[in-house]
Image (cartoon, rainbow, N blue to C red; front, side, top):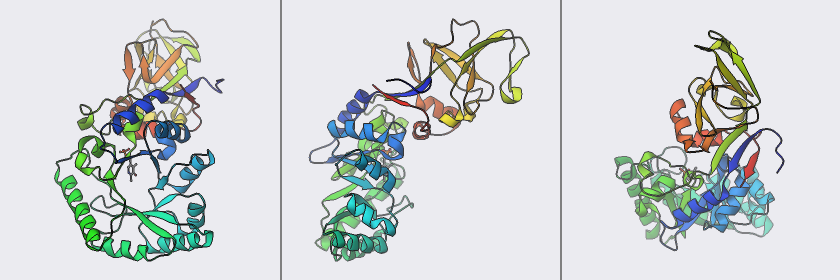
Length: 371
Ligand SMILES: *Cc1c(COP(=O)(O)O)cnc(C)c1O
């Protein structure tokens, strides 16, 4: 593969496959595994990840929005795809035409989907989301039975699923999780009382999949773990995952500076003694956040070198000291080099965020290289 620029995100698809297999091993058949590939597959490339996940044991795909689902369909991916966010009612026809599985929490959307399905002579499968405590999206539990029952009256519409989402899944025995599961179970029991048995009940994200087998129901929805990253420290001992993404570049320039000289905008770093500064052609517009300025380290041939001065939009600077580095040497910003590694977790810790944000921030202008 010829690269457009000496910067690339390397995605190890065998790691994705191994992670999907490890997650599948946690499930009791016939529980289904949905691979969540929203946000361009958490920055890894939605189409490539979806294909590997589906051939390694996932049966379904999950995305946030319609555009993401349509991208998968354009790539001839025919597996069931669920939309987590509510689609605007005006998009009902596109949802039906692409055979997507929308989340429904408003009756207006349910009606629009029904009308579109009838018009096309199709049945649209929908999943109703219940807000059991995340308080982000969903029908209040006490209204769930009435809502599902009303949806079932609509022509061309099938309530295939009822689901919820945990707010504190990394604490399986915490009050919040226990209460949310209890509320969800009450909703499912109330539905059953009315003779309603949705075939797919689901609640678990990666953390719940790994930590709470009782939350698996008929399907689990795994995102971050598919990519080999842990949703929380609490899952580290419970399953073995392999990070799939490395972020790399090549040194584009090397120069010597003297004691007291500053580097980059604002001269926020000044050399204590004579040293060598390496330029790396990646910056915050590539998703390597400026908040890592004077904090992060990169690896060159297994050696750790500090990022110095303010990170620019398209370039950053590294203090190479007297290390044996040269122009064109490979720089690892995330991933392994020799016996060392920089993890997405480490980058997240340095910037007060989570590994999720680190990988999905890697911008579209960074070429993805699949190995
Ligand atoms: C993103 C998302 C998931 C996946 O969460 P992870 O923590 O990445 O496993 C599951 N369900 C819903 C509704 C989501 O939005």
